[in-house]
Image (cartoon, rainbow, N blue to C red; front, side, top):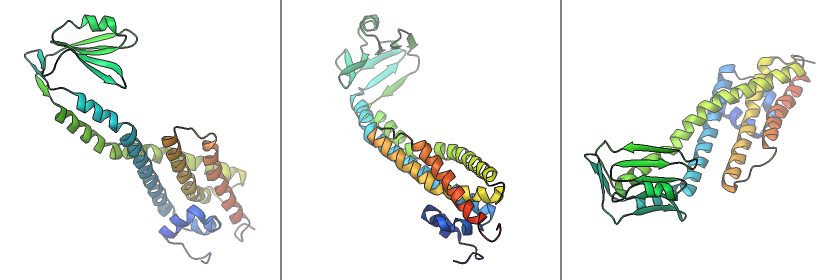
Length: 260
């Protein structure tokens, strides 16, 4: 590839991951093209973040939600009175710990006194007692009917929104934060290099360096998510990749014919 030739968009995008010596040629692309490069990178990485998170949710949270759905009895409320089609009291447990009880035949006071934290559905009230002793009580004023199938349907709909929900939140956050990080690195390297080359060039170089830096961040996120282990120093490594590659490419340009 000759220096006077402008690299293609995708060859620049892919090359920015490993072809660090070609960064000086890649900056020949326009600022608008580099901004699209930035958006594509963020979209791809956020898709990876969302996929990792959705997989984690399905593995570690999904079974608990399915367990909840299976244990939900048929409950109906009419004229402010609850009726339940099961033997009472009905205790709801997770991993052997009682977290809720349904009893429309007895006063809820006995359960509030017995347990430090508990959710109680009585004949005419829905009561929540928190571990700090705070108790909130709600009158059953709205008629409704609840079944296991209906709860399972809610859970399935909720799970279907995990990926797009995380992706959108991640995308809006990463667009803002990564743009700030790129600007910081471009400004610092511009100062270190005494504006040779200029800030715009360093901004483009930082966008190129952001590709390996962000993909490193995705790998670290995946490892920490499934190993439940924080990897020390990963943040410094991210900044080292972003700043180090930007400076490395800047030095190549500075030693080139345009600045010699």
